Amino acid sequence: MLLQQLDNILSTLTQQAEQLDQQNRRRARQLSEQWFSAGLFKCRSSLAIDYVAETQSLWKQLQSTQNTNAKDFLAEQISQQLLALTTALNGSSLPVEGKDRRLSRQSHLAALHQQLVTYRDYEHRLQQRVESLQQQQDTEAAQQQEKRLNRCQQAIIDLEHKIQRHEEGR
Image (cartoon, helix red, strand yellow):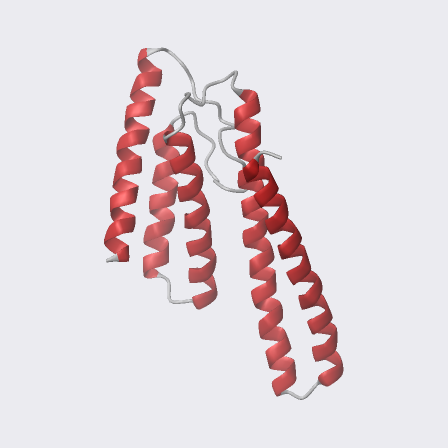
């Protein structure tokens, strides 16, 4: 059921991106290649459809991978990309050159979300290390890793607050 919903969302985004690209071609406008942060999308394009295609590619990769850590990372990446694409494609004004303030604000928010994905990956790996060291009964090393884990979790909380303030426009 959820898989079908995600396929439907990607299909809708593809249609919206194609319409946006077509409108821009008619108006002889170019999308800014700074539409999304470099950390959120690998592609740099003036076509919205290229960003949707990257998300579809990640979706296919997620469906075929067996590694749990890779699945978690890909799922978070897809989630962030879908959020950014939905926001951008449903926006009231076209993301064309000259809309720098809106673009930079959106790009900054996307970068914060990407940083959160990275921090959560660190947190997951640190939790695994702590568990492994506890099983090996290496209490000193486990305590060191727990301290790192606590600092990482505090950084995640701080970053989540920063994202929330940014989304509220403060």
